[in-house]
Image 1 (spheres, helix red, strand yellow):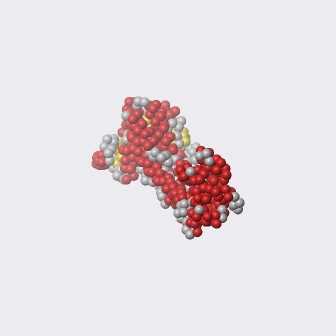
Image 2 (cartoon, rainbow, N blue to C red; image 1 turned 60 degrees about the vertical axis):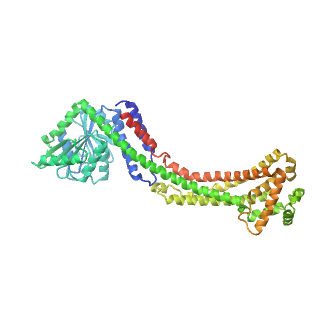
Image 3 (cartoon, rainbow, N blue to C red; image 1 turned 30 degrees about the vertical axis):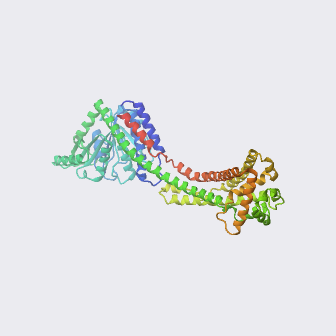
Length: 571
């Protein structure tokens, strides 16, 4: 393979990326993708990366098959001594056994392949070894019966009643350069063996099939039928070896009956070019299979990103609605109901003054100074009344947005793990929102003073503004922001109408009509921008929760690019 170093780097990047891909949402393909990520990561660790780093390492031939198919007996027969326990108790093979030539010991003593299995070098059968669970140890046996360059691994049963054994069998087969699949004349048409053979086909693994316990005289008939089934399943080129049935005593080996398989393995081990070609063929098959499975994972990642985007949109919509309600109530006069109206009336003057203003607004300029003197309500009290009303509005809408967002999320396909990690407190505004809101509103009220001061200076109205006080003019401007009559009824309309007349006429006299409109719009825009910022912070809690899941907004694009890069380097 050319650019082997680049290929190793690309495979390492793919391995790292798989660690960052998560499927916490119950989107399409999530469950299958979760298991595929684990399986591919394990295969990269167990086989691909070690093999890329050591292309000249011995070829690993994994012997797999159904319970009672005779695979352990076949391994012992090839080696010429019992190296793997077998019997009638199921499962018959618990601890995987790897047999190698003495010259190849260094390749397997270190955890070059199958790094998750503890090494136990022990010739005794039935020992528990050093691992807490014998299924998680790899027993190493040295034998000159195998040629250098070949290692034979007896795997647990693929259809074991023990789930851990089944998983280990699949893991070991995924780490093979060559599969030797053992079945029997009685069971070769069963579904379980063919599911594994289909995996071999998809992976493109070099495969030989051993048909064991063939009744005497039925060899050709069964071989022909098995070849037919292999061809139907896309495995027409698979070599078939048959072993006739014989009466066996406990621990009796197959002797010459395993000779065909032993010769095939010896030829593979002694022919360096053939062995190297087999390893490369196996690697290429694995990469092709991984590319196909990575695309499946990428599609599932796309679905995660789409669902996550929908969840973000739920939050966007509900908080946008909350801001819209605040904007509407700011503009339609709702803010100056009740207490604010009362404080404003006391602040600007008596009811008699308002009646005079409505009948003779032209006399306003001569009464401006008097209108703002001797008032029983201070501007601070007026500001506090406005602040209280606005704060209640902002927080109530934030609570509603949070509650609706969380409800809509729960109605979506969140996934159990993600649902459990979602705190119930997310359904209401954050604990710090009231103080943050109060601070922003006070800051906004203070900014009105700066607006009046700046506009007054630019219009050379400093003296007129000074005659009333910047604070007083800013209070009038604040009320003007809310003084539209929409939403008010009865006496409130009359009061609000008077307030609007006072505010408008007063500011027009000071600043001019054009400046007045711009000033009111600017003040209202600034207020809503501050509320929007508060809501953005509240909404970010939902975004942060999604970000913590590790779902990339680009879906599976990064995985596709890495897979494509590996494919290009292979070809």
